[in-house]
Image 1: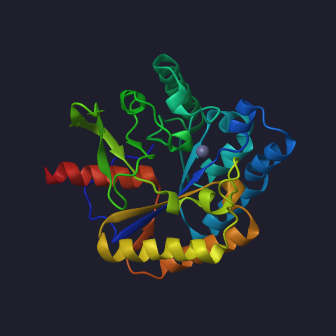
Image 2 (image 1 turned 30 degrees about the vertical axis):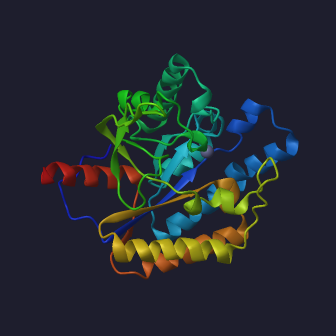
Length: 287
Ligand SMILES: [Zn+2]
């Protein structure tokens, strides 16, 4: 258990390396054929151990969003993540698309996922990331009610956390009415900072993926430098998947990205739960 830190000045820039450890969870739900299942299995068999070794070598603590199915089906992978000092957050059970779930069904799912993480870590999880970054109309309210400190699937900011708003109403006749900000903190994400759309062909064939790592390294490094220069105290969140980033040429790119971040003064790598706790403590101290 991490105690809430006293308010302190945040690092010049914090970089959060986050890993969505989907593995075969969504393949099981969809009934995927053998080759797709094997692509997903690579994440738990090769990708995750490779990533954990790199993080240990570089002394980096990270955040892993793990579906309940991955958590329970691959206990050795879960144990290795925890042994490395990394945070585990929730990511559905079978990687469900929340927009397709009924409210009661989603409420039960959120609780089931939180309970599974609590069983392996001994503490309630702090973070939720929606599978596919897809939220339904009730999702944010349910995640907040379940006691999560932060959510990480929205895109209304880039290097700054913000309080999640619930109850927005939009209508072509009545216009837009914005709801209230609650306690839930948002850790914003971006497609350009996600390994998947760069590297993985889409199921429907409308995206070829398979980018050269030099292209992705350029995008991530420019985001890093821009955030460092323009968002003091901010957070750069990178989203990765072990079955994707775990391939050799992409691991080499991740290593170079870490070099680029470490070369800037005042850059710290940290887990999201710790950054969110520090940000929250500063907000409270400032008000
Ligand atoms: Zn996922």
